[in-house]
Length: 185
Image (cartoon, rainbow, N blue to C red; front, side, top):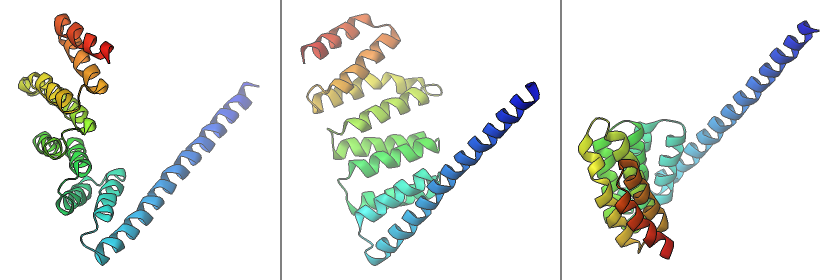
């Protein structure tokens, strides 16, 4: 009986592995088709923001971060007020461990659209990771979040992030202060 159990377990693992490989292959084929389609669109119209941005997304999904940087940069040049392209450029640089470039991209996104909450959160996450090598970056978090809270008129997500930051560093006074503001919304 024990011999058969191992056969079922091994058979199940093989089927699971084939299934996972199928999903990976499907995603790769979809990405390749998307890249081909968007490349053709961008060749027809070199100022097609959606195609450039879409290529950035597609290359990011395939972990080709160098190409993702190329197309997010192109998208941000085509549409200068695109916080999304600049934010995703920052995400790509962060994946590449190019923290200074990521910070520059996030700050540009915030300058372009000060109410784009996602960029503040991404920049806080960057500073938390970067703080392991550069303690000064963590000190910038409250100023950054307060700027975002002011720009977004007390965005609850940013308030929660600020409260969590103060709790993490043991500043219960400020955590309580901002919790009261959050509770009043």
